[in-house]
Image (tube, rainbow, N blue to C red; front, side):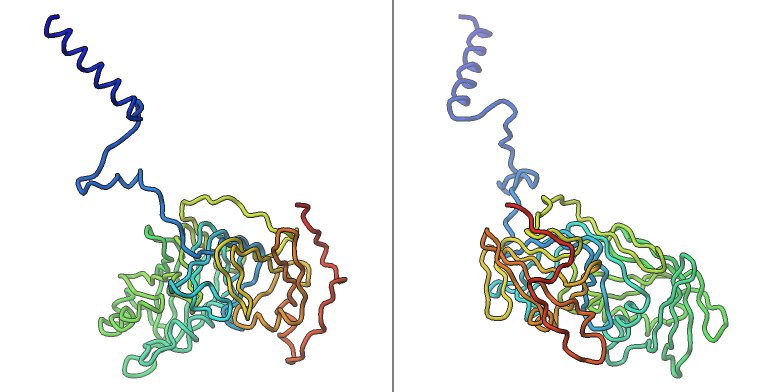
Length: 346
């Protein structure tokens, strides 16, 4: 046997051996320099204890006067402490990790958010902040403390940054009706540094841009997600989130146009802990469901709940709008009440 034939026979033997050991053509066994599989081959770790969530047409209140208008959201509730499950009674026990969402805010809600949280710290250089909309631009007014309180007005456009934040670009700046050039020039280096040092409140300044970070912009539960679009639409500020992930759409047990549905993981509310959670929350009025996380017990007590055939729970809560009047409690909702919804057959 010549050298060529011997080489071919050797290669054939190696191929047979690899086939017997379980390797197939096209199967990759490449590793990185560290010896670990390449990132694209590594299976994503499970979200320990996470609760899948899907929301439609919900006015999600993070305070009585701050409303996130959640038109649609798909994601998961991630626990913030390994030893504590997602707990309704503790807003800091979880964050909302968003896959996809469309959320709108009124200027009234954003004004309240800025004054009661983002700029509510000792030594904050801005106070009496207000935001309005003029055409497709946002108009921010307030007073900045530069020795004395100086009224200002900033008119700007909205967009998303490459890293998923919200950019407010200052087109025009006025201080006591006098035009000013540049955000940093207006704020001054020291005041700009003071704002940036409080980045954990969700606001920083970069050049002529005010950058808002969704994850830090609100009190708990924080929203973790990538903003791919921010714009003024219909007199409101609309944010579109998209992580690039495409989880399967959830099917709630009760058909209605407005709901919050939790599935899987561990969920605790009051004295009840649900393992492999299956909880849908709906309101008692047609249209958008008004829900206040921090005062959910009021809504729960004024409503009723029904078990499903799959050991899940549908909680029919009183809409939070019932509690927005003179402080009187709403009448108890009875199971015979109808909101035009129907149970899904399983």
